Image (cartoon, rainbow over all chains, first blue to last red):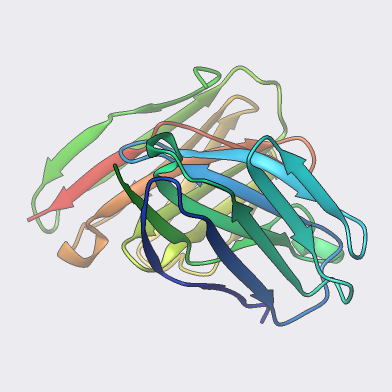
Length: 114
Length: 110
């Protein structure tokens, strides 16, 4: 079945350093989504990428979808303590009865030291 | 996201007990999902429902059952709880691909 792998599992940074998490799918994705879960909270949708090679920015966050639509990355510039949490990528199952289901990566837990 | 609520928020129970976790939503979405979250394993799908008469197993449905009582309500039951079902459980809804999660239920099975 479809697998979505995410690395690294953990990342510890000093405040002000950059952070990147990578997501790789075993199958081509129609789109990819990113979610953030704050400590003690629930996953919250951040963004969806649809086009091959697409790059989107949200303030200090840059999201990229690979040319082959099988990988994606989230880059945070100059991390802040408010960035702490777990970042998940998720890809949809394609077509048929699986439509609407998402496969989530294992998540990257980001810790930011002030 | 008060649009998706889960009860209870925390529950401690004993092995062998039947437990029901409830999820309600006011977003008007047809699709609802139950996930469990374990450290290092991300979010794994237990069951999902695309409308009131539609129930589907996810990747880890063994030991669980669900009921879709109405468009707005989707309940998850553990018929006979066991310790390895200790986890954080999330309900989610969607209209398209984007999913909206409830606050979660932390379940501990002793």
